[in-house]
Amino acid sequence: MDQPVPISDPSAPPPRSLRERMTVPALAFGGMLYAVMQTVVIPLLPDLPRLTGSSPGAVSWMVTATLLSGAVLTPVLGRAGDMYGKRRVLIAGLGLMVVGSVMCALSSDIRVLITARALQGAASAVVPLSISILRDELPPERTGSAVALMSATVGIGAALGLPLAALIVQYADWHVMFWATAGLGASGVAAVWWAVRESPVREPGRFDVVGALGLAVGLVCLLLGIVEGGEWGWGSARVLGLFFGAVGVLGLWWWQQLRTREPLVDLRLVARPRVGLSHVAALLTGFAFYSNSLVTAQLVQAPEATGYGLGLSIVATGLVLLPGGIVMLVFSPVSARLSAKYGPRVTLVIGTAVIALGYVVRIADSRDLWMIIVGASVVGLGTTFAYSALPTLILRAVPPGQTASANGVNVLMRTIGQAMCSAAVVAVLVRHTSPVAGTPVPTLHGYLLAFGMAGVVALLACTAALTIPGDPVTGGTRRARGRTKGVRDGAMEGA
Image (cartoon, rainbow, N blue to C red; front, top):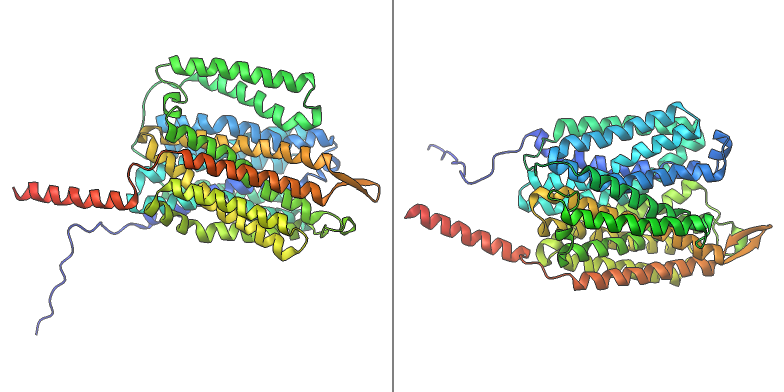
């Protein structure tokens, strides 16, 4: 008896090629590379003054330069991606990161190192550009999980980068670390070039050079004042001048953007409650998230003579933070399913509430190692939900041609939140110190105050999320509309 010949379903999607299957992993790898690049310099900071023959203040610019350039370039490159091609700009950003790594690997001059780190800040646009590519290239049923994974790469890469860099610094010449990041970056460029095709979605026009310069000057004044306020004095003429300059320049920039036909940032979109409140939530979430890794790293490395410190090495510190990165990787699909079923606003509310709960755990017990790991992982879990929901909120609220620039602004708000967190944590810890072996060391009370401050900010982020207007189309509604459209189309064809 002849076997029936299987008939393929004409409505089924065609099988995906290897390149199409590798699109999401390639973009996620690029996101992790950016996070690794941000963290690898941290183990070097205590020794860099001796290695480079420079002052600690000059060495701190190895971090500050990346922060400033990243804040400026993220919205600029996002807008360029919308206009000229997201894949092209993404490869350029990763390429500048590789160039910066090679420069660091070849030099010990602090001026060259700071310049190189500023170049590496261009990679900050990787995440918003990648999210925009995913929206353009993936079917709707796969976009949510891919965006959630892309958002989680920030925490995953940071958790992996710190112990990796510490191991290299401990057992090899410090330049080897930058050769390693250059090699990884080159692999990321090759992966994106091979696996990611250029998105056809564009918004042609003239690039707003005046807007880009105004935003750059305003952000540099703002962030430089925040970052250096503790060192220079919050009431000093330099810091006050920077803040007044930021207010003046950004005010003029806002006026110019509203009157430009093709602005760098469409402020009319920002004025929409779904977009503007999402940016506010991003700023507050960035603040709340950053305190977790920043304070934990100092807490576990504090000397045992303090009565609370564990005296861990930088390698062990990285391993303490690693479970949080694993949690972000494992639970990113869960956050995508939550957003698909209940909407990203609900996911954001849950995420920020979980972050606040994590800080309750941190305050309850910050002496036992296992409780420190549990508390840090709970904060990481909440961050996964929040960071995956934010870009999804933006994707649903802006037209396809402005996805990269809008998500670039959202990432910028997270960066500003992180900078504000760093300044606030330093201010709290400096005010709560006690001498240990003749050296002032932050007290446990100071660390708990920092955790409490971050928890309160997480609750403020939760409040901001609750005020975001509800999703116009939830997962169930979208599927129902899809079925209705299919029935209607079928009826029309039958007619």
